[in-house]
Image 1 (spheres, each protein chain N blue to C red):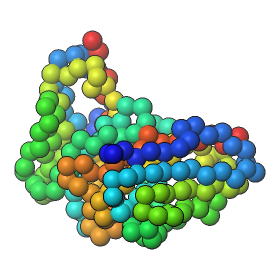
Image 2 (image 1 turned 30 degrees about the vertical axis):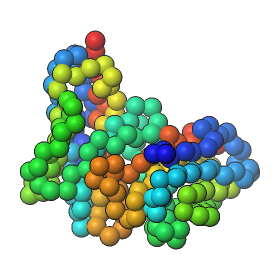
Image 3 (image 1 turned 180 degrees about the vertical axis):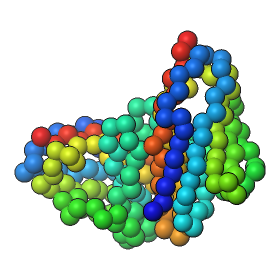
Image 4 (image 1 turned 90 degrees about the vertical axis):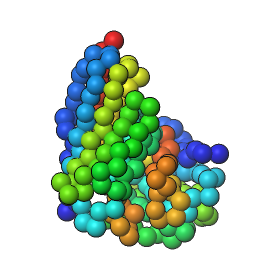
Length: 111
Length: 116
């Protein structure tokens, strides 16, 4: 059975801190790893990683995939209160378009 | 238009009711998805439609019945639900069967369903 595990489950930091969120996966016919931010309802797309070792960046957020060790990390630098959310990673299979989500990391930024 | 629109936003229904959830996108995406998300849990895939044909049914009970009338519209018909079916129902779409590396899957804001 496909499995995606995120750690930590929750994280509380002060504004300005840097955080690293972890995602490991065991997925048949792995294709890509996606990161989403979910604040209230709709998950918002952050990154899709398909190649190992290539960092993707968007502002203060960055992410990288290690296909040998089967994990990905999401870094957020200079955190702001608006970064408070649940961060979900999800693994995509080849062929059947199935997205398997991890349990999420609940990030809380204290002003 | 870069959105997936879901209606209604909230729905309360009795166990004997029949209701439908609606999802619409006008991005030309050819794959559409239904996910169920219980409180403090990740989304779980229910159904995948690819080019208006049902391609994946994740062993969902028959009281949930999906329908894809055209490439822009996805419905989820609900009948004889149980209180444990109360959840956030999310619709998503993607270009073809593979999501765009720049946009991934686009999710709607969901319908919060309560079964009483």
